[in-house]
Image (cartoon, rainbow, N blue to C red; front, side, top):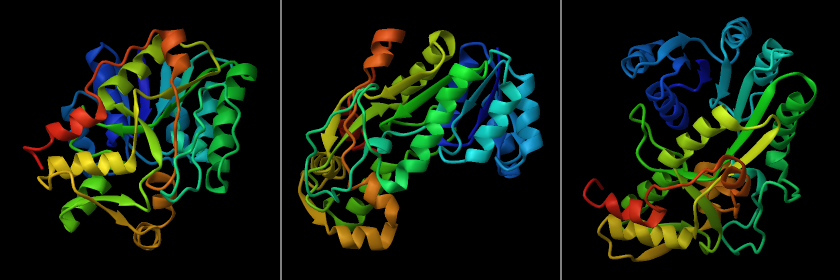
Length: 301
């Protein structure tokens, strides 16, 4: 299958691209920075130099591919609209990547939410995530009404070494960095907020299964366990040689340094269950749980 994948230099995108290439697919990867094209090509991915704003390029590669996997930007409405238009009426596959912060709250680390969401649970997103949820709905609607096989994959906190380029994930590297700077495991606020998590090796398998099997209009959370940020800080502290000791990073200080990203990425609760992926696709996560993986970084830290 010929696959056009956006975000080919990213953590999720390059990992998915390499996994699908290893499964025998031909992957054309959108590369924003021309200087990274050679590195992408070295992975066996055919680089397509351009950005999400290059609408003619997106339409061309979407139209000539058997499937499109969008991992570059969960909020880029124009790019998604262009690629859906190019695929309309073809029955081809469009997989859109979102993120489980869509169900997040504004706890600022102060509380553990009792709410756990599966793919069918109603929720009201924070204002900062309303547009993302609306875009997810437009993708799903296209699967029902526009002759496209659409899928939305919603990863939780992703961890593990990249399977593609040497790039890091999003949330845990910040915990590692701030903990290293402070000489103690760091969590935001009280650290009581909990996030579900998934290993990158299990996540790429979910993309493969979705590509091969998912019915149109499918929506899949991706998770295989959960932990509070205080627990994660303890694991990181052990990995860094700080004996598991932890300390609060006041929420106001975190927001001042990292902006609203800290609000939804470090301070919120995002507790989800990947029931549909397991039941509809037979997805069986098998990689190391988050605590085991963090502690395995002791030698590298």
